[in-house]
Image (cartoon, rainbow, N blue to C red):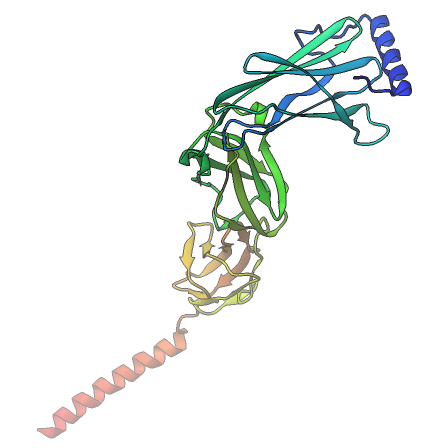
Length: 357
């Protein structure tokens, strides 16, 4: 089959001539040939048991599309060559130099038991040929085994119903059986984690990263499809992204001198927090439940800083407030009056004792 796009073919040909003039060359057929974008994929049947003996063979691949490039498909059923498959191209737009290709044929009536289909895809450009093969094994039976009807169980999902302090979130989940496709849905947007042809046959654990998440609430669900076409679904996870630290302000302490050794420590926070602490004069943090009092302060200069952590672990740091403490002691005149009072009291006591006799 040919893709009749003369203009694009001319451009491609000019690129070839330019590359040869520059001393470059395209890879050989057994390496990376610039024709195939994705391997040939048998969409159906898949590796499962069917109760119908009448099935369609559906195949797809994608590649470059120029008039000088030819693609062809043939297939065999249980080792018997069944001939060519008609290919239909699908272009993303009229300027595209690549296309998706699909082919479908009705399979002959199938007997009960196991069957093997092999699809051969050939791509040729000038004298260079690239070949690709895909195989599927399936069964025809009156009943479908229970294990083929049971979807994979998605477990150990590492994303939890909590608040995260980062816009990039790494996730992992496991399956109880071999799968051929995995994906997830984040805020109603479906994403593929691993393309089926890159998935190891024994893969039962997958990782993916959510990047650039916005502030606020998100909903996440993971999916996995097994070799029989059953789709497993994880529990829906609701989580919050909060990368903004709260704001904490000390409101009761000013840059002045206090005449008391006990100074109130009042502050304001703009959101709910999970922990509050303060540091006095650069010493270790002291956790508090709310507004507090700095007690037993010595005379001199002091400073205090308040810290607040939100549920995501973001920490807020207040401005460091400097202040002084100057507690006044009794003056000399007061002390002298006190001494005089004591002397007078003692003198009166002695006087009354003498006259009492």
